[in-house]
Amino acid sequence: ISGNIYFDANGNGVKDTGENNIPNITVTATNGSNQYYGVSNAQGNYIIYAPANSGNYTLSINPNVNFSITEPLSQTYTL
Image 1 (cartoon, rainbow, N blue to C red):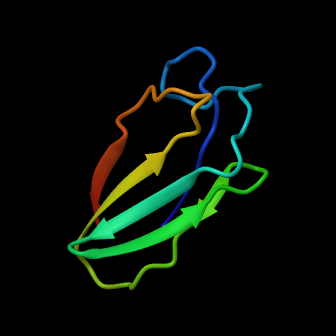
Image 2: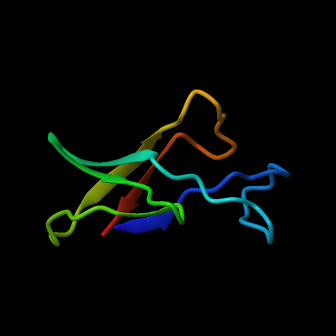
C-alpha cells in the first residue's frame, strides 16, 4: 500500500503543481485487529508492507498539529 502526503494549498483535494510534500506523517492500514504502519519520507511518499491477502484495509493518518485535513481522515479500500 503506497501513497503521497502533501499540503493541499488550495483545498481542492488534488495535488497541484507547487504544492509541497509533507514528511514524517504516520499512515496506518487496519485490517480487522491487525495494524500496519508507514511514515512519509522527505518526498511525502509512504509504503506500508501488509500481507497480500484480499480484504478491506482502512487507511488513516495522524496529522501533524500544524496541518488540517481536507480529505477524509480515513478511507476504506478493498484489495
